[in-house]
Image 1 (cartoon, rainbow over the protein chains, first blue to last red):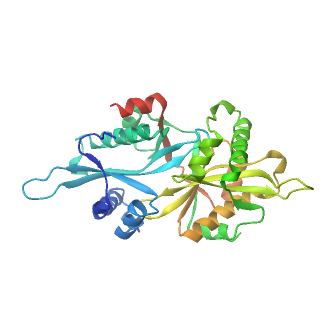
Image 2: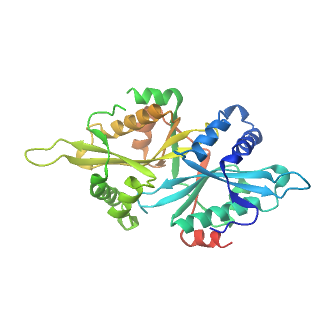
Image 3: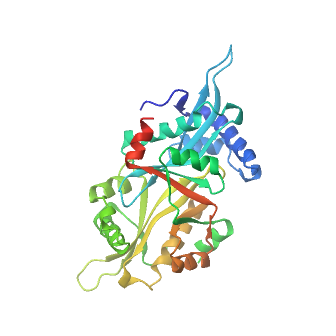
Length: 167
Length: 167
């Protein structure tokens, strides 16, 4: 599948950069303590035999003798709909370093994932947005995304998950 | 992993029953036309080499010379969090035939999935609920689930997905 310029599929060699950008995103969202992910976990769950997620990276060409610089990531996994009967794409995280925005990488990631979806016959492309993030919402709606406003996600984790398991 | 009584992991032999219950759920939600899933797609995406989802079934013992009767399904897939670094469980559909409710199958499915999550080290168990479904919300909150109210899901599909891919 033909991806937009500057975007490529990540490989295991990108694991350290992916973790670095996950941490930068958490700092940006003022929640750095929340990240318990490690480079080993990234290697296992994005690139291992039983991988659950995939990533795209945004790359700037090397300057001088340096190597290409990874300045953005889009981490996604396959969802599934019992209605359509086929997988969809769920975009878990999208991050472009603040100093490398306005180059179009955000839109390029979304276009890349839409192309991957079409190429494979996947029928839905979804992600979540914080309700107060008006600039993001405007950007997404301009690209044809629509809010599934009547649905609320429920989550069980930590002690509640253990309690439920032993019910 | 030890599942509650009456609940077991589905096999490819359950594909026809799974599709039957998906269709019953769509009729129950007054949206039967929305289901384009087929038995072949169920076999491919739940039980094939590149399966994306899994299912549990609720089964009533055979009476007389008949076979066991499948009266409920829970279809789920693995999510992934860049924060935790490990998979989670996303419950895509839960359905128990109306005439077989109040036997506790709904709760048994949730307990079963919490056990599968703990057994594998998965850290989150999530699903979505329609905002107006007060009985379901009360049931879920009593089991320790909490609403992620500040997040809204955005979706692109159909013509918008094709348009985004060609942007």
